[in-house]
Length: 213
Image (cartoon, rainbow, N blue to C red; front, side):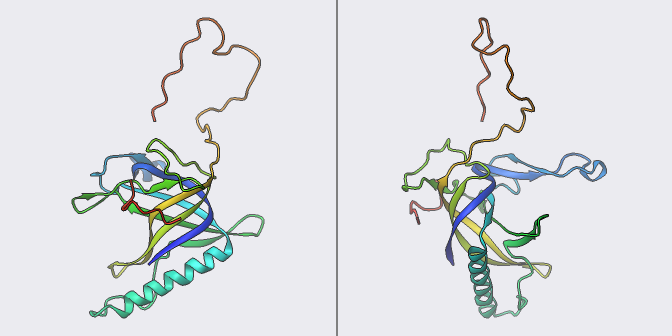
């Protein structure tokens, strides 16, 4: 089942290349959390993904569609292994400190299925112009996301509904945050001064050609 989630705020998008979630050494002992890092298609857990915040109407509509898709999968289960209700859903409501409710979702697609590599989800601008391979979506950007609603049953403890990202339409691009720079601007030496060193260079196609927006 295909669906477009409209006017969301993207969180931690990782769409320009495959990423995987890794745990640092001795994570449990040190109380550290894991992180996502760029990787190759063949790495275990490699994929493209983004979290997002949506409004209540979008959340309610998505919830109904996910339950409908799961119910259809249960009805088609000839072996009777699918539980009646999904254990996992791709979105949840989160209560904020001020008492308000935030509706948060996640969509993802593997970088490889079997032997077939999956290209990054297609990204287009508000006028449906295709964005180049070097484009990087930023946290806080506003967008429409095209997904496939996918019921799944892995085993008796892992079943529910996931969202496979198909494409994304960027409506408003948020500025990139410099998370590694703790300083503020001051009067003084700048790279315009004589003998300034040149800064180091910054290191930094979807399942089909259709654009659903």
